[in-house]
Image (cartoon, rainbow, N blue to C red):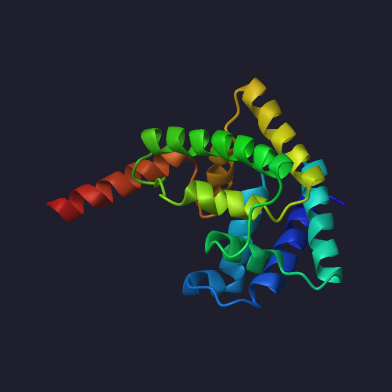
Length: 184
């Protein structure tokens, strides 16, 4: 199975779960938007990690569990993140991802916003992953760090390239001009 096909299957399954919950953001309810954002979010990860996560979703479906409901229940404090081992891996992943997003925000402040609940949101999403998937995910991040890659950058670059932009710099310049013209 090719990476794009794996990503589509993940997005399809997640949307099936998502469509069964009451989400506050109406834009996310648009199937095409939801799937596009989820594909972009997972795009930088290895096929091995993606296949493991797809397996997590398939197991959840067979067990009549809804990982997206669990993510939002975790954010509301209704369920916990997991045991000590799981929390340890999740904290390492969140630390790296947060550092990457902060780096991008400094470089592209008009494009990349720092959301206050970023760590909580990501931690609760990761809490729905199996230990096996979390370990593979962390390995992807550690390999990226060794190679000087920023997977958050790659995710945003994927997003904006599919929206017709050549680079984040191009988007930043456009947003900066727009913000400047609104001030004047």
